[in-house]
View 1: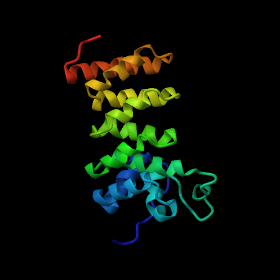
View 2: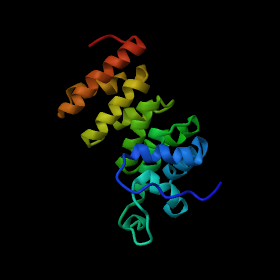
View 3: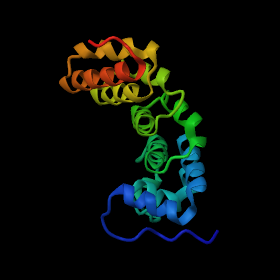
View 4: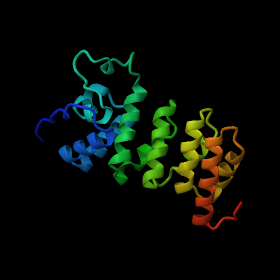
Length: 188
């Protein structure tokens, strides 16, 4: 493969940049890079790809190169975000594992990937994340359950119908309705 060119200058949606990277390196390679990043690869190993995945320039003096400034969980999050736009089934295990990330950002992004791509095996991790302290994570978790949850996860969705946060309650109602229709569960 030839050297990866820098992304075009200017503000463009990150999804556009990721699709450009996909066109440059191919889906299989992009998924491999994203999985490696999600698994905790060193950011310096993928600077050309991270220019596309993160939206940062990654010049020599860019603070994003410094893990003390831009923590490693960002790199894992950017790897997961790449999978949101360019999926490959070979990433399933990394997404399942990413749901247990110590930081909420990679876990939340894995929830989004799970919901968008119906990732097998993510129901248990999503159910656990319905108890997360941050409402945005609970919203993403219950949204994922609407797509990937099985009958044993229905109680986790129902528990959020009474959540203190309106956004969580509303998503819980929608997610349980999806699950009820998909799994032939009783309507609530």
